[in-house]
Image 1: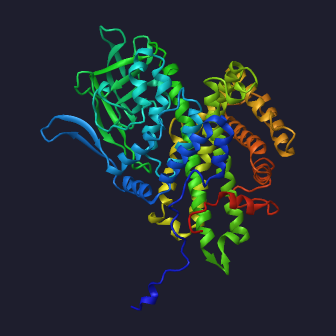
Image 2: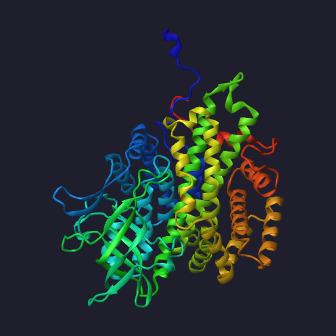
Image 3: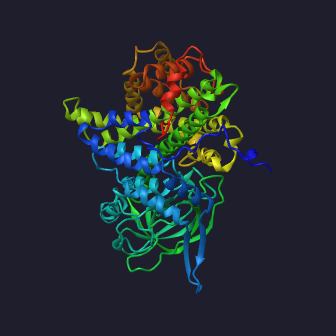
Length: 565
C-alpha cells in the first residue's frame, strides 16, 4: 500500500496543553467580579496552577485511564476476612490528590472560599468529572457535621484538609478524610421519609447501631458516611465511620457496585448495615432532614457546577475542532450556519457558568458580610439573610434547568465534530455519558421543581430576594423586562401550581440567567440571550439564533487559544 494513503490532513490537533482557567474569560471575569480585591491575586494564581494541570496531557490521560479501568469491589481479603474495599486505578487517586490538594473540600469559613472552590471545581471537572463525587460529598458534609459540635470538632478539620490519604484508618490517625452519603433506599428513592433503615440507641448518648439496606451509597471507599435512619423519635441523621476509634472495621457490607451509564471512574454501591453497624447521631433525633439539607443544597450547587463544566468543555472542543477543520472551501468556524451553532453552544455555556458562580458568591455572602459590605454597602447581616433566601429558591431552579440543558447541549457539540466526535478517542462520548448524571443526582427534575414551589409557598423572603436580584437589571433590555412581568403573572396564579412546577422553575432560571448576563456579560452575549431565550426569537434546537446577532463575538469568546495557535 502506498504510504501517501496514510497522510493525515484536515484534522484538528488535540485540545491539550492549555490553562483551563485563564483561557476561559467567562470564568475569570466571574472570579474577578465576586472576590474581594485583596483575595484576587492569590486566587488567580492558584486557579491558574490548577487550570494548567487540568489542561495538561498528563491529567487528561489520568481521566481516560480512570474511566477505562473502573473501580472493582473486593469483599474479602486473601484469608477470607470481610474487608469491603473498592480498588481504583492509580490515576483515580492522582486526580483526587490534585483536587483535594487544591482545596476543593475547603470552602466553609474561608474568605471567598465558595467562589474560589466553585471555580476550581468547574476547572478540574473538565478534565475528569467522576472524581468530583467524593470531592463534592466531602465539601458538602461540613454543614451537617456542624449541627453536632462534638462531631464537627473531630471530623471537620480532616474533611477540609488539603491532604488526600487513601488508606482506611481511624480519623484521629489521618491527615485528611473523604465523606460520602447514603440516603436512597429501594422502596423510597427521593422520598427519603419512606426509609426503613432502623437506628437503635446504645447506652452512650448519641451512639446507635443501624440495621438496613441503602440502594445508593455515593463514594463507598470514603472514610465515613452521612446516613438517614429511623430512630425512636423519627428520621434522624447519623455519621457512620468505616473504621472505629480502636482500629477495627465497622460493619459496612458493600453488596455490589452499580454498573452506570457514565461516571464510570467513580464507585456507587449498595450497602448493608447488619444490626451491629456503629453510628453517631448528627443533630437532633427526629430532625434528620433538617440536619442533612445543608449538605443536599451544597451538592445541588455542585450539580450545577458540574454541568457547567461539561458544557464549557463541550463548547471548547466544538469550537476548537471547527477552527481547524476545513470543508467546502474554508474553515468550518467561518461557515454561517456552523457559526450559529457554535455561538448558541457558547451562549448556553456562558449562561450556566455565570449563574453557577453567582450562587457560589451567594454562599460566601450568606456566611457573613461581602466585600461590598466591608467597603460601606448595606448591612452585612441583612445582606447575608437576603443571600440565604436567594439560595433557597435559586439553587433548585438552577439545578433543574442547567442540568436539563446539559445533555442536548453536549450532544450538539459532539455533532460539530461529526464522526470524529462519535469515537471514544475524541473524549466527547465520555462527556455525553456523563451529561445526564447531574439532573438525576441529588433529586431529579420533578424534585427540584417541587422544591421551588415549596419555597414560593412557604418562604416569601425567597421570592423577594429573587425579585431583588433580577430587578437590578430591569430597564436594560425590554425582552428581559417583559419576561419578568410574565413571570410575575405566572406566580400570581397558584391554581394547579404543582402541575406547572417545571414551567415555573424553567422561567425562574431563564429570567435569572438573563438578568445576570444583562448586568455582567458583553452586550453581544446579553443581546443574544434575551433574543433567543427570553424574546422567543430562537428555535428548539441549537443553531437557531437570529442571524442579525453578532455571532462571531460569541464564538471567539468561547475559543481556547492554545500555544502555537
